[in-house]
Length: 364
Image (cartoon, rainbow, N blue to C red; front, side):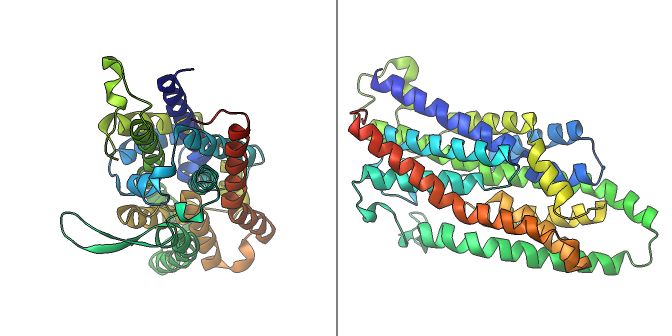
């Protein structure tokens, strides 16, 4: 296979990961609205797919973090990207099969870190832990890297989702105190269509950008290593001398995510929408507004926060506002273990794949 053909294969694998992200994380945007019976599963999937597409086209901050903010790009090759994506896809399919709402974002990040470490021959400096970067336009200095953009949000976002979800639900309880249950369901059933749309858009904003960053990194790495020398004119769009998120990258990644969402993640919908806590429209509204607002805030800051973390903990917080015993604590423990294992598991898989490719002489 030619180097150009290999890059096209890697781009296809990135889109497959994006697609699995869509069906794996479809539940994040539609589980609550299905569980509360405001929309049918088919209606909710169509809504989520459309809003995912729009959200994915609305920013690049997270894409830049994934593509150029976590690892030293000089060590990255198309083989690095390929191994990172395969490990992420394998983890997504495994957790989807067993119905666990694990993080596709952390699967991607773990795979990228493990593959980069192997590509750098175990030089830990390849991982950018905490780096000060100045904005070329404003001169404002901000911290970038794994610690401020991934580690801190990984622990902070679930706490924020739980606490804010509980507060929002507490406020709503005070508002609806004088309303009849039938009126509450009617009002918030309509409002939940809005909140579900907001959640779908925020999911697209948060998760659509992550594969954009990886695809842009793959094209940049291939260009830098000379893999695209003598590139045919009809493939000139692949040439990327400077790391940037091109328009074609935005659209193909957004479409792949939307198509994956349309297929749906019914196993995880069952876990989030029916097993975690019993939901009514007012609870679904509170959880979706909380989760989507968290994703919007972190997305603008360039933090690749897990959509799964945001909505799952928001649902937990909403349930806890009623009473802590309403939560399925055994299931929560299993979900937490999945969260803890995602980055190490995908990192190890990707690391071993790069090492195996090196032994077999398949590195580029």
